[in-house]
Amino acid sequence: MKKELIELAKKEGFESNVHIYPRCFNAHIGLFDVDKLNNFHDTKYYLWLCELQKWLIYEYKLHIYIVPIGSYKGWHLANIRHLTLDLLADKIDIGAKKESFKSYEQALEKGCFEALKIIK
View 1 (cartoon, rainbow, N blue to C red):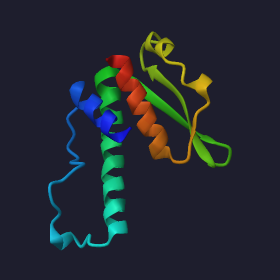
View 2 (cartoon, rainbow, N blue to C red):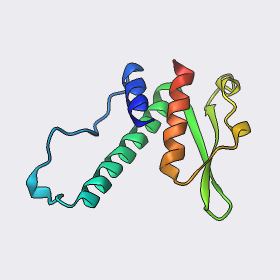
View 3 (tube, one colour):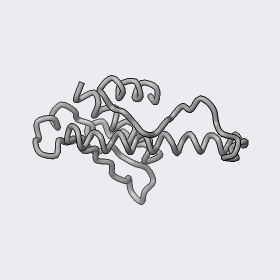
């Protein structure tokens, strides 16, 4: 979903300050360990998702509601709502799907994807 989300966000006009796929890494940052490199990419992608979520709020007034399951055993994408109108909330019924995610980041990724589909 990562690639599709990035492409859809760019298509809708989102421009990020976070560069997800850098051409090369500076050797001075010390990321030679594969695990550290993967964590670095995951962190950059999460920051990109946060920036996209903020853009969705400011540009389209769409808020993504993510709630914990039980004692934070997972996450549930509860709803996507327009902050001033309830008109767009009817276009998506995420709550009925009861889809759960292992991480907050996964739920945010799905929420951003669904929000972009609303504004499309």
